[in-house]
Length: 192
Image (cartoon, rainbow, N blue to C red; front, side, top):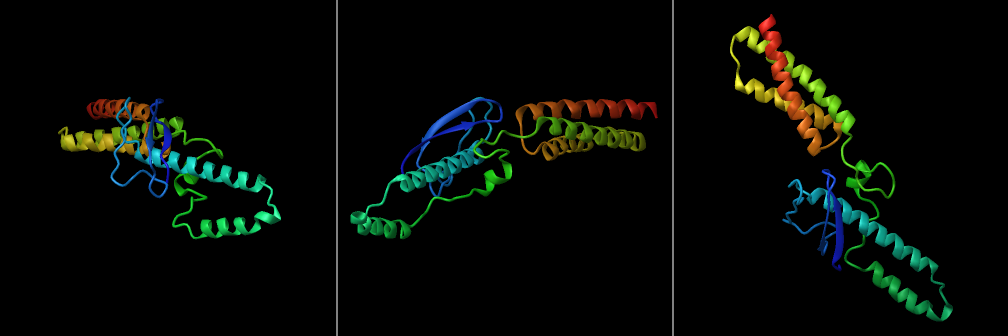
């Protein structure tokens, strides 16, 4: 397989490119790829982009083959090329389960998680975390650090689950929601 240029759009909004020789339409095993702006692991997204590029290349090659008129004098040569293509050790995939599950429109790149749903998930997790924090502080009389970690995990889980993925800005919002949940929980524990 030939070396190809890959342009990866990160969730933080930046794009970075690199040249790679794909192995089975993915990055080579053990490859590490970090976004130069936010430091996020870019291997899953790069694999999706490589799969999309290879599918587009395969479609273009098929369209070119269909556009070339077949003459009778070249029939034997065409049959030999057909047999050679059939006996190839690896054929380009026609579908990618990663992109099918995540792509919204045909031919578009994965745009990232839904930020509005992620914000709603963080707020719902914050409300539940504030109630849990207030209950623990009220009934035990102590501020237990593990409960604070649980509140943060609950907010982050709500944001990631409803948002449909990870995002730098959703992470910041979830952090603020977790802090606010602990403060609101502390306020209600004191009022009770």
